[in-house]
Amino acid sequence: MPADTSASEAASAGSQMRRAYLDHASTSPLRPAAADAIRDALDAGPAGPLAGDPGRIHQEGMAARVALEQARDAVAAAFGARGREVVFTSGATESIAAATWGARARHADRHGAGSPGHVVAAAVEHSAVREWAARGPATVVGVDGTGRVDPEELLDAVTEGTCLVHLQWGNHEVGTLQPVTEVVAACRERGVLVHVDAAQAAGQVPVDFGALGADLMSISGHKFGGPTGTGVLLVRRGVRVPPLVVGGDQERARRAGVENVLGAIGLAAAATEAAAAEPRARILTGRIRDWAAGDGARVGIEVVGAAAETSLPHIVCLTFPDVEPQPVLLGLDAAGVSVHSGSSCSSESLEPSPVLEAMGVDAQRSLRVSVGWSSTVEDVDRFLDALPRVLDGLRSLRT
Image (cartoon, rainbow, N blue to C red; front, side, top):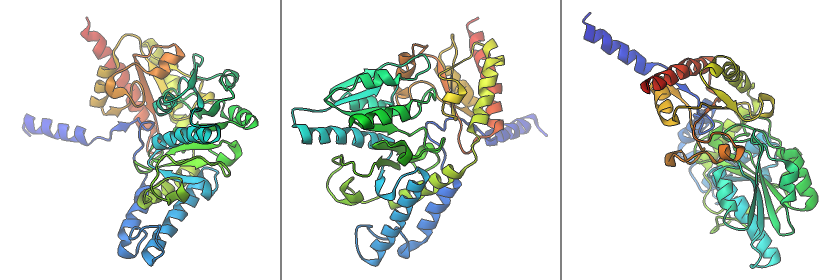
């Protein structure tokens, strides 16, 4: 066989090799169960759940309404909520916006337009929380070196004018779990609304909205294998906040616009499967943590954030002292490994991570490795094999 033919076949085989996708915290591939549910809905045709507007009382509209409410009940069951507490949105970013704007509008309705409502948030919250909090009076509370906020310090920032306290369930970059149970209970005692960003927790750890007692909770479908552009704002029964999106009475007048029935069907299937799945994430990330404590330490790798038992199971954040992250990402990508570096939603600007800055650690050089429903031991081992080689190659260029 000619040498060029052999090389071509080898290149073709390499291009077909399974990639190690380890960026589930950014977005998780669509679960087969969600794809099947969507496909079934599409295949149903003119008599199916996508034929009509769920707000109409004709046959097609009622079929859409039944499918939408079945999806709502399934999502509620997956996250410990009541069906009437589920508001379908386009994702956690919209849910966060609706929670923050709604809390401030509620405060203004009760205290007058000259009282915009004070918001309290931790410095490591997602950019969607931080930027919406900054649109009015806000106090940002610092964190310790693991990224955990002190609940007493957070609650000390609450004033008579506070309309909302934000606290993420677990951090989106380093995985550190926050004291949500303690903070929610204290806020309920004080009569202050509390919003929990559960975008990274949902589908990874058991989430029981009713047991937690939070007023508002944001969930994003694509983080656990649902369709992109789907999410939920859970609103505790009895809590009334004005809607962010107005112009119709959909979602019981809590979000205007014809509902995304197809997205809700896929979201419900993914949520149901995620809630019932056998947890594997901590086994996979445990391999990375063990490697970092041994062989990884010898090439300058450190884990940042909290210990495994006080972190989300699917996220590990690694730092390295002397190599820029962009060429590391490119080198890993060339080796068939997908991970992420820097701030969750600002990597395009190549800015330092606000989360790592708040923790007081190197905010310039980090890798976030995140596993999900499709991840395997082989994916993790491929990453652990590739990273030292990529680092060595980049360091050798300096000499």
